[in-house]
Amino acid sequence: MTATLIDGKAFAARLRSRIADEVTALKARGIAPGLAVVLVGEDPASAVYVRSKGKMTREVGMNSYEHRLPADTAQDDLLALIDQLNNDPAVNGILVQLPLPRHMDESAVINAIAPEKDVDGFHILNVGRLATGQKAMVPCTPLGCLMLLRDHLGDLSGKNAVVIGRSNIVGKPMAQLLLRDSATVTVAHSRTQDLPGLCRQADILVAAVGRPKMVAADWVKPGAVVIDVGINRTDEGLVGDVDFDAVQPVAGAITPVPGGVGPMTIACLLANTLTATARANGLPDPQGLTP
Ligand code: GUN
Image (cartoon, rainbow, N blue to C red; front, side, top):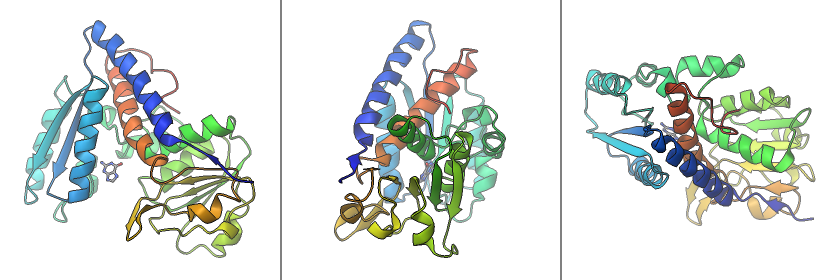
């Protein structure tokens, strides 16, 4: 058997095209969605992400507002900018690129964003809303993984899901989303005992640890769906957290790196911006973009 390839790149392109149609419809009613992205400092990887986010935002017809601040910006000045964006009706979504310089308190900055404009879903209110099953802004990468899983499997109810990684950005919200879809969820991490044995019980295996090719073939139950969130820069180029060549003959379906989860993250950022715009204007949530 060889696993079906889950083509996140194609799925994300379809999603962006649908979002572009919805943006056109909103604009016809005089509503122009806008996303503000704030980058503090000159981290090269962050600069690449921010450029790419701006480009995709404009491609779907939304307004993109980019704010670049020097690495030595005082936290109060960043908070003043966030306050200005919170109060700007042209801005429906606000994203502060992480990581922030070390002199800043990441939680204080994130929690200064108006929760309804927090398109990353990192604000403590959105974290709590997701955990309690209320209407929330949901973090983009796990939302993208959920969309791929639902598209491939349909109903996730009763499936055994193992999430490797417990980050606030991916692991924890991924677990919440799977639980919300009635999967049986285990979150594994660096202290987990017999990680291979645990993973072998998973119908759905999500790897989000940032360790190149960590998930080996004998960690995977035959036929399982494997979602690889890892993007690791190595001498052999970009590789995921899953040993793709070894796992592909065992799994039922697998996301490649690149071209799997990566493109879904930005598409879901645009989806969240569209949802935030709809909510800000008293319109119903666009179909299929929220859990
Ligand atoms: N840095 C790495 N991933 C992310 C993300 O999803 N959102 C933000 N704001 N920063 C990041």
